[in-house]
Structure formats: C-alpha cells, structure tokens
Amino acid sequence: MSYIVPIGPYHPALEEPIHAKLYTEGEVIKDAEVFVGYNHRGIEKLATERNAIQTLVLVERVCGICSHSHALTYAMAVEAINGIEVPKRGEYIRVITAELERLHSHLLWAGIACHIIGHDSLFMHIWDERELVMDLLEKLSGNRVNYAMVTIGGSRRDIDDDLRREILDGCVKLKTILDRIAVIATTDKTVAMRTKGVGVLPKADALRLGAVGPHARASGVDIDVRRDAPYCSYGDFDFDIPVVDDGDVFARVLVRVLECYESIKILQQALENLPAGPINLGTKLPKIKEGQAVARHEAPRGQLSHMVVGDGSLNNHRVSVHVPSFKNTPTIPFMLRGNTVADAGLIIASIDPCFSCLDR
Amino acid sequence: MQEYKRIDIQKDQIVPIAEKMRKNGIYLVMIHAFRNKDGQMDVSYDYAVDPAIESYHVVGEESLPSIGEIYDVAATWPERELNELFGLQFEGLDMSQRLFLPEEMLDPQGKGQIMVMPMSELLERNGRGESK
Image 1 (cartoon, rainbow over the protein chains, first blue to last red):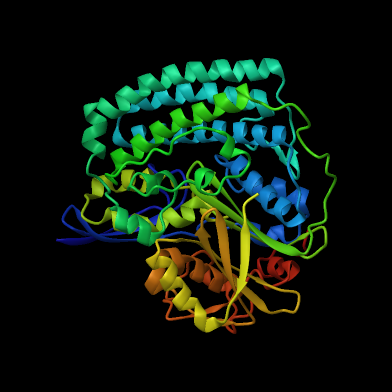
Image 2: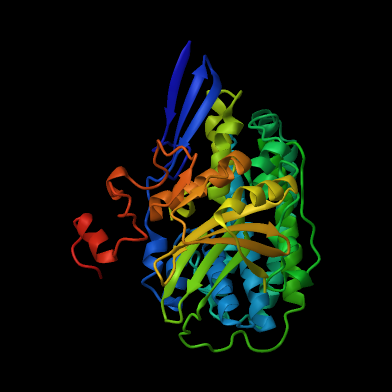
C-alpha cells in the first residue's frame, strides 16, 4: 500500500518547524520532500536598516546555538571591506569562543540524537557533561547564549590568567568525559543498530548537492574552511579534520565525536600561546566603506558565509546570511529514500538542522 | 583575511563557468544578489577556489539562466530564494512551490519582494503600521 506520511512542522522529535512529506510503500520511504519557511524573520531586510554594531547584535540572534559564528562572520566581512586588521589576541579569543561553541553544539546534537534513538540515559549523561562547556562559556562571556564576544576590530572581553587556567583545566576534564562518551557512542549496540547503514549519503551525492560541515565530512568529503581558507589565526594551530567515508548516521556521530577532540586541541594551543597585546582596536561605530566582501567561517554545522555590501554610510546596503543548514537541508530527501518511516526523524536530525538559521 | 576576487562576466558565461567549476570539483558557496546604487541587479556566483573566493558578477540582468542542472539543489535553493527576495527570474527553474515566503508576500507584477519593498510598506502590508 502507498501512503503519504506527513512529518511536522510540529513534531516531538524536532524542536523547530520543518515539514517533510514521505511517499511510502508500506513502511519504506520511496521519495520525500521537505518544506521550510515556517518562521522566516526577514533578518537580511532588517540588516539593511542597521549600522555595523546594531547588525552584530541582530545577526547574533539568527541562531541560539551558533550565535558567535554569525557575529564573527559578519564582523570578518565588514573588516574585509574596511581593511581592518584584528589584533592577534583578539583573534585568539574569537577562536577560543568559536571552539567552545562547537563543543557545546556537538554535545547538544549528540544528546538529541541519543534521545531520538531511545538511549535516554546517554542523552542525560551528555547534556549533564555539556554543562561544563556552558559554564566555561558563561565565565568567558557572561552569557550561556548570545555571547556578545565580537566587535568590529576584535573581541569585546579579555581572558585573564585565572580564566585561562580554568578553561585549560576544563579541557582536561572534558577530554576525560569525552573518552567515556566516545566509548559508549561508538561501541553501544543500541546506538549501532539505530545508526549504522541508516540515512546514507554517498560521497558523490554529497559533492553534487553541496553538503557542508560534519555532514559532508561523514560522507568522505574533506572540506573545512578553517584549513582550506584560514582566518582568525586558525593557520597557527595544529589540528586534524576527521573524515569518515560511510555516509550514514553512525558516521555523522563519529565525525562529531572526533571533532570535539580536535576542538579541545585547538583550545589548548590557543590558551597556552595566547599572545599579549590589545584585544581590539577600540573601533567606534565604523562607516562601512563602499565595497563588497564575503566572509566564511566553519560553524559547528558547516560553512557559514556572510556577504556584506557597504555604500560608505553607517548602515549596510545589503547583508546576505547563508547558513550550513541551507546547504544540508536539501540533502534530506536523498537520505530518506529507501529507509523506513521509523528512522525518518533520526535521519532529519542527523544533519544537525537549524531551522532558526535557515529561516533567518 | 580571506581573499575575495571579483570577476565581471556576461550572462551567457554563467553556465560555462558553472560547468567548468563543477567539473573541477569546486564548491558553489552561494549565489548572492543586491540592487546597486543605480538600481541594477548585481548577482554574484561565489565559488570556493580555496583559499580564495572567486566571485563572478553579472550586473544589470533581471533574468538569468538557472544552473540547477549543474549544481542541483546547491543552486536551485539560492535561485528560488533570490526569486522570492528580489523577483529575479531564472530560466528553467521550477518555481511551482514557495521556498521561504508565503504567497501573499509576492506582488503579482513580481516587484513587491521584501528586499525591494520599503520597510514601511512591508509593515503596513502585515498590519503592523509605521516602521520602528
């Protein structure tokens, strides 16, 4: 029997609105479509009526998980137009915030994935441990979300020696915790049965469809903006880009677990070699010079790009925000085909979708 | 600082460049657009030729060929978005369904898209009165 099974836009397994239409033959998904746009907020339009500092605050609210990524990428684009060179210490603090953000984002996703597959004890364990990262972010910025750490020309808050030590100690603790989580996530039978061979996206499809971030790297595509187009002193750090070839949900778990270790490596190097000097240029409200720039950042979910056009006034002429979920969401129907309806929620969640980002 | 190379091209070069990039395994970062000071559309096809971005600009065209056949959804989603935001037309693009914005946000003449319409008019349309 053929059925059309609708999932969402309101669904218990998905915290944000997306609608998927599954065309099934019995329990097997033959084809699928996704529909987005349930929460479009017109942020790009609003940005044309804001100056650079106001826009930093605005774009930081595109997403509650990768808020620093948006502020950072927008600032990088404005700095490129205005020819602003950020002091080294400011860049390192940006990197430290970005990597802590990646850790909390990956742990958040891992928890949700465990909840969806029915491994709730691991979900609670991961989210409990994630609090360590959230506490560090709170100590660093004063906030658990929307860190407001970026300004045009650098970072807004410095890291003193006590905090530097505390984050370094946190990294050691986190590594021990990760070792425990990694063993369970990669060897537990429940996790393996629900994720291995499920929602496969082959490398050729990932390349053709333009998948980015951990989602692409789990399909064997070796891309990462931090290495391929270094920014914010990422070139100073020694880290690996984990790539797994299987392309299934398990591979996506594995890539994110391995990336957490790499983030800790970057954090330790940045904190141990934190350069002396100013954290920003003390830039007052800058006019955005006439010109155009695109900045790219490897956000937790993949490549994030901001295009900014300035016309010499205080306000942006145009800001275009393109998020990793914009690239990864259209791949969902291709992953769903041939899988069962019971796995649809997990497959959709496996790209770590952010519809708040997507419907910016 | 990441390098950004602007390269101006004509409309008929869009497809051959996309084909060449796709053949070389180059990622299409995004298709961006804005209306410049002269009121002309400036559409840019940004490719990740790492470590730089090569940005191919077409200025003054309101209708462009779709590169959906070459880059699949990586191109059709940005094209559909630009159609909704600016009213740009992409030849060969299936626009039978909306991507982000509801039907009532579209002007029948294709001129009322949100990036083009003044904020005050947008708010009025939504029953929100004056801007700010």
